[in-house]
Image (cartoon, protein in one colour):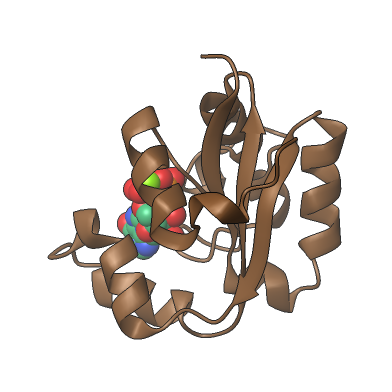
Length: 141
Ligand code: IDP
Ligand code: MG
């Protein structure tokens, strides 16, 4: 779809490895616009709510603990087909399965500590963008 929005998160592992600039540069090189951006340390309830679809899975508690272990960068990315485009740039959830050159292949250290988040569908993008950002926070690009 033209002019989509999607939520991107630079996760605590990548922030602590000083990869913020590298990851944002990649989005800019791929002609993706950044419509909003904020650094934040997620609270436990925030991380639990964000990942509610995974509640009850064996990795849930560890995932919440990881996502609250340090600051993250929250971004709204904007562009034509940006939801799928961002997922392609990210690569597979497990870096062992991620294509060469993807952010997760390059920077993830495990299936959990995998550097970046990206919304996986128009429905999740809408929920996730509004989970962290008010409409007024998005710049008019
Ligand atoms: P995605 O981030 O590629 O959309 P999801 O299946 O939605 O992957 O899982 C959300 C996040 O939960 C992953 O990015 C990863 O951090 C973590 N995760 C997913 N599967 C596992 C697992 O099997 N073990 C540990 N952590 C996992
Ligand atoms: Mg997902």
